[in-house]
Image (cartoon, rainbow, N blue to C red; front, side, top):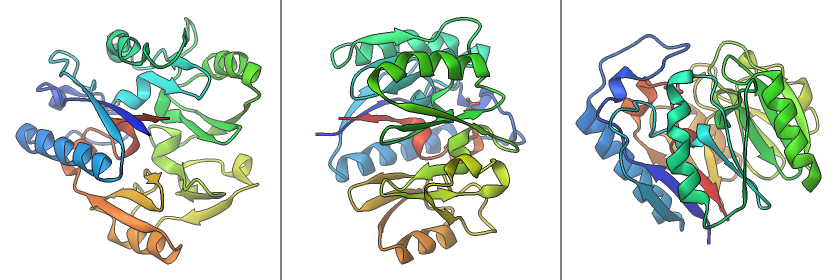
Length: 253
Ligand code: GLY
């Protein structure tokens, strides 16, 4: 059974890190309700959700994806480029300990899970404001032992690699090519997001269904035309914190 580690929204979410978006007021009660609905959507798609308690003084702690990578063979605790986020790691390490042996990314490397897109044995890693080349090299050094091939991808104009592209898990990638150098993805079929929805590429496919933000109906239609189902969730308040679908969970077998 697929599992998803999630963490409750921090009451301090409005103090989150922002890199490419302007700060807007966040309705915390609505953010909490939307996050609960997101967890229910994961459950409705067959996942077991392991929900961790809020970290009240860590505004971005709901975005668990950035701290933890889970491969079939090993879990990796990252070292976020955002220094404010480094204290988030320890409770995630505790949460994944029953399921995987673990390694940690170490100084001076930085790496955030939002920059890591795994497709089979290919692992694409964004070179971004949060992930440096030392982080990519350290990750490659750990997972090459398990025969993964790591490919750096230049990210420009958005926070993370997965702000710009996510795997549809069958050789197709949903992508906004304006935000990355797509050349390393050349072996895959690229499906462009709607031109008026640049943030729409951040999605998760589970079975035959793609979990997507309600804010992107045109890209939802593009995904349906690819023969996939769409599960739509309203995450407007989490999106104001520069997050989307992948950021709020770590999904693994
Ligand atoms: N607010 C999400 C992040 O910057 O990590």
